[in-house]
Length: 213
Figure 1 (cartoon, rainbow, N blue to C red):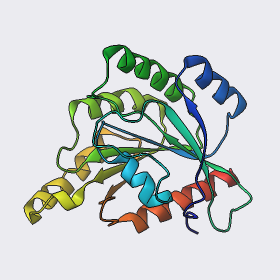
Figure 2 (figure 1 turned 30 degrees about the vertical axis):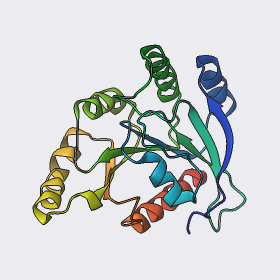
Figure 3 (figure 1 turned 180 degrees about the vertical axis):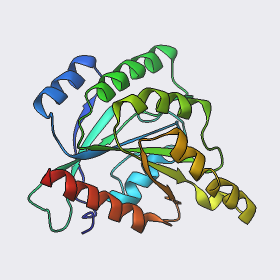
């Protein structure tokens, strides 16, 4: 099975508490994946690499994603099913007014509170700056919910020295010990399209499992 490239269709952008609550009321068991991470970790680039170019808008300005953008996508062999992709605003630093950041916190909290057990979280981190304070805060919040997480270290191509990659790899045992909900860790370069095949296989495998539960 594989993600059908170009099948992702934007259906809705949520930026109000009432919209989030209504979404979960109407779609309590929708299978999907949620992309979340600090601002400027390459989230939009990864989405486009996995689902097809121009699915998500890219920008050099941190904080470009200002809503929870929801897409449907298709998987080969499971074409009769709709799967959902949630592109969440980046947490941490963003070049936007404080009032807007505060609103993001409200809608992010509402979204995460409504998460079902058929939603898989992708936590993206910059391979050069792993496990920052805001990442730890995110895990402190999400761990009690027992939602399964894929931790994806992106921008691996920026680590030019082997010792830098080795140091990153050595973090894995501590991450698994500290964050029990992390099920798999991936090292990728969305820009170079490196390391994406194992990630895509994991996505399709989980989505297949979710619809059979």
